[in-house]
Image 1 (cartoon, rainbow over the protein chains, first blue to last red):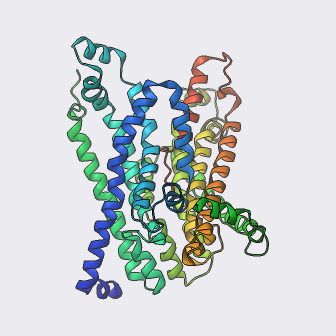
Image 2 (cartoon, rainbow over the protein chains, first blue to last red):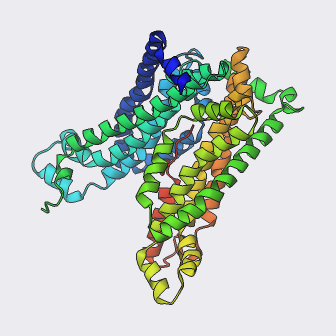
Image 3 (cartoon, helix red, strand yellow):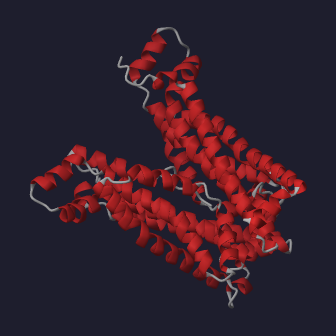
Amino acid sequence: MGDLGKYLGDAGTRGLIWDMLLEHVYLSLLPLVISVLLAVVLGWVCHRYGWFRGALLGTANIVYTVPSLALFAIIPAVIGTQVLDINNVVIALTVYTTALLTRPVSDALDAVPAHVTAAATAMGFRPLRRFLTVELPLAVPVLFAGLRVGSVSNISLVSVGALIGTGGLGVLFTDGFRSRYLAPIVVGIVLTLLLALLVDVLLVALRQWLTPWNNLRGVKP
Amino acid sequence: MIFADALAWLFDPVNWSGSKGIPVRIGVHLLYCLGAVLGASAIAVPLGLFVGHTGRGGTFLVGGSNALRALPTLGLVTFLYLIAGGGTGPVLVALIVLAVPPILAGTYAGIQDVDRGVVDAARGMGMTGGQVLWRVELPNALPLLIGGLRNATLQVVATASVAAYVGIETLGRPLLDGLRVLDYGQFVGGAVLIALVAVALDLLLAGGQKVVVPRGLRLTGQPTGPKKGKRSQKLVATAAQPDSGGSTA
């Protein structure tokens, strides 16, 4: 405990940790944002074109099986980035999160009742507007359930990147291990858990804001 | 370019022999994983069965296992390693800690998912609590339970690679060594090897998951009662999809 106080007592160390935390947020949340867009597009394609569904979701399952350390290393070989490029982690986590989200989005779109889409069509909604204002909002709860899993796992996975040069708070683990010093490791674990918790709370708040009709508990139509 | 080097590394006979060869590494890797999944099952399956059967502490259990999922694997491995002062024991403990939540979640969800009508019928036929658990709930829960084992295995295979960082001779070693000496063929070749082992293991367990579905629930495409068939399809599908509680490390 005294060690921890001494470690955090240094303003320079606190500055470094803050920078790592910011990098961690960037590395874990940027993939989340990109993969929401990708998953909505891919989920729609699966929903619309049934033959595409099996192939795409099968690939997603296999990709999801590949361990992160391996994916971090395979990405530069596939797309030709530098081995220590920060984007490798962003791309790898985007691939995971998209693989995670596509199936629920597609299932949620399948579950939109036919009479709802028919009503929207009858009211003169063109397909794109109908998708964005009727079908997609109805898929939001499912999308957010997936996003919550994705954000927690991204935040915990970013640290592995420290082994290949870019790891946000994960650098605290490699530093601590190399110098046989527990304080940075403890700080890294605690900050990772707090960040995961904070993002989860924000995601729940965002979902409630986006789907106000779900908050009317006890009011039966 | 880099892939050609990776293939060259993968197919170089030198890398396949001796105590630091690929087969030994795969063996050590799989031993760690087997030990961790067995150890975690010994803890998580009884606990999941108890909580699922009695319904006591379910919320706490689900919340707790979700929180564990946020634990950074590299942090846990280095932390336990330094606390214990080295050796392979702490790595195994870390792997077990990470394998418990998915197995627990799978077992609990499996028991919870059993049709209440089926459980009531079993009780109505005079089965005791133990008989209901062993002869009705457990067989019906098996697909989701194996799904949990599958997720745990994924997690453990991934983490065992990461754990090469603290010095154990798993499949992560060639990759990390390759990076250290800037041998990118070995770096990517090691990564491909990890990916292949993970995918092969997962396919094996996916097969196991299909085999353990009780015959009465198995979806065969024959009209053996549409309700049962549909139900089993739903069970297997939820257990096999990536978001049923897994996070790769």
